[in-house]
Each structure stands twice: as C-alpha cells, then as structure tokens.
Length: 91
Image 1 (cartoon, helix red, strand yellow):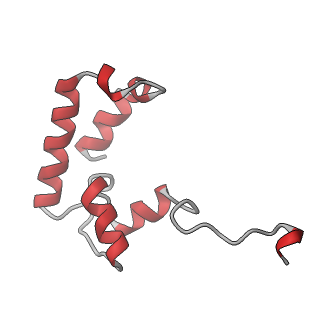
Image 2: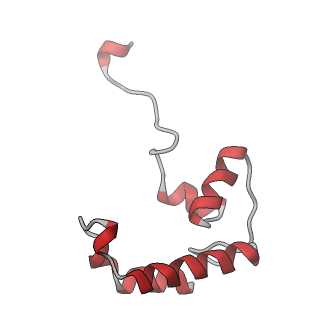
C-alpha cells in the first residue's frame, strides 16, 4: 500500500460530506507533497507502479490524481467512458 493510499484510508471519514474548508490543512499539505513526490518519481500514487499513459485524457487525469492507467480504469470504471444506454427508447 502506498503512503497516499494509507493516509487516505486512515482519514477517509473526514472526506464524507465535508467542505474542504473544514478539513485539516496540514493533512491536505501532506497529501499534496506525497502526490508531487510520486509524480516526480513517475509512479502511481495508488498502487506504486510506473506510469504508462495511453491518451492525452489519461495524462491529464494522472496530472490531477497521480494514478496509473490501471488504477484510473479501476477507480473510474464507467464514469469517464460510460457505456451506452440500454433503454428501449434509445433503440
């Protein structure tokens, strides 16, 4: 488990329906520092694997989250590239 994933898991309850202005700023700075360090080392913040980006959209997402392609796909499965509707009216 990477340091960012561990930090997030330990304090997950703080992210639940809470505005960012009410969060612990020290914790947010630590997260930003770890994200920058992982990006500098070109490794995923979630699994620790090396980056292998496929498209520009993936690179843009990596710049925001620091995740590798596999973690992006696993995390955002169906959100970034939703499947077409199976609604009978769209046929």
